[in-house]
Length: 193
Image (cartoon, rainbow, N blue to C red; front, side, top):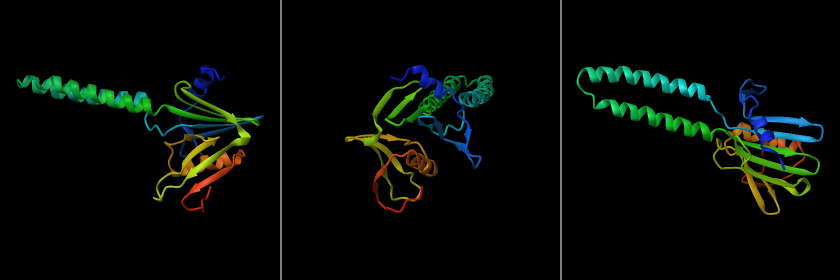
C-alpha cells in the first residue's frame, strides 16, 4: 500500500510545469525503470497567495469606502462590506481547495494503480495491468474534451475529468504509449492522438 507521504511528495512537485509549447502542463509523465507514472492536475491559474492579494485589495477598497460611508453617517453599510469580504474568502478558498485534486496513474509491468485525492490519497484502485483497458467517450461538441476512464472487470474509474481537449488527447496518447489498450469509442472512430 502506498504511504500518504508518497502521495504528498507528488503533490509537492511544481504545479507550474511547462509543456513543449510553453503552456502550463496539466499532465506530468514520468518514465521510470520499471514503468511510468502519469500525474494529472487541474489548471489552477492563481495560487493561494494570489487569491489572498485579491481579497486584501478588495478589503482595503472596502475599508476606504466604509470610512467614507461612516463619515457621512451611513454606518449600517459597514457590516455588509465585511460580509462581502467574508463571502469572497469562502468562495475563493472553496474553489482553490477543489482545484488541489490530483490523479496519479502508476504503471509497472504487472500492475496499474490509480490514486485520487486532495493533499493525500483519498481513493485507490490497483488492478492487474494485463486485464485493464482504457474506455474513451467522444462527446458530440467539437470543443468537448474526451472522457477517459480506466476499466477492469466491469469496474470503471474516470480520470482527468478536469482536463481540456488538448490535455485529454495528450493523456490518451500517454496511456497508449504505455501499452494500455483502448477498447471502446463512443461516437466517431476517427480520433487523432
